[in-house]
Length: 477
Image (cartoon, rainbow, N blue to C red):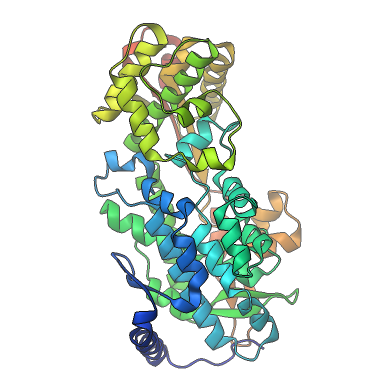
């Protein structure tokens, strides 16, 4: 079976590093080198010309102008890194994993079949975030009808015959549909899918280390070198090959990785002040939509692409790719100097506060009070649906994340048994057989019943009198 023998960890690590560095020295004049604070040196050889060409496309270069963590830099000043360098890091890790698979799965037909699609795997890793809009998650939540999910936009751009990305993939002979499927997490080749989009993939491995480093926190630090060292392909009960972890050596590293992801989610991505600024931006965008719906003029000279977005127009790929963080900064600067009255004046107030890093919102914690949270959410939703101006001064924020999605939890969520088993992190035994991670760490299955949750009501204290009944319910209900 797959990978039944392995050299000692130390010698194996040295051999791989030596081979990697020797090859890089030989090919240095035939590729590109990027210095990276996370991975040190990222080398892309001329043999991967499709990656070098994709890097030069406007769709990928645009990611330099989209921050990885949105408004988190207002709380963590070092969080200025872009989705471009993250995407480059994901491609780098995907290529390293492919190298490991090539070494460990030598002679296996199924592994060889996956490796024949290595160019598609590397391309999907690089392109997985091209569908992110400016301040992406805030935009996705507020402007869902116009923006939608970023994975959908990534797939649309890849599949669009008129896009330069699509043309390049075709020109280099890549399977465009496979690249799109890998990005959306629906590829039939599970070994390839595990690399690009899974519970232990190149994307998560990169962003945990990168976001931890750039924010200055220790929560997301993981033992990347050891995780890569214990990765190996194995065969599941249904016959398909998966990318798993050596059960004798890798269990604790993966457990630590899962805790690191949960910790950085709670302490960085959903930090109370980060979420407060995001609530302010969300309400600002909602105000812009209301102003246009009322037939009024937006304050200042709003960029045309933003105006279309706020107007609820369906965006084509070209218009979407014209949007980045700079458009929102231009909008904020324009709106900050042109307040008049009514809703426009409130938009100006919020824009000025965001530009000056002044957090206007307070919050009330609703965790542990589900009945109160449900009632608060219903009232806020009713205000928004009824056009009540109070809706622009509050934001209900409810977030939940499980530490790990076990097969049992996936079945309970509606997946069939085969899909549920395909979602788990695989453990590979000494015979190359795969079993779900939760069989070696049963407490992970139990943790599904105790998800990480943050439920808060953000509100503008300047409107406390108008919000009195809602705030009393939230505080005392």
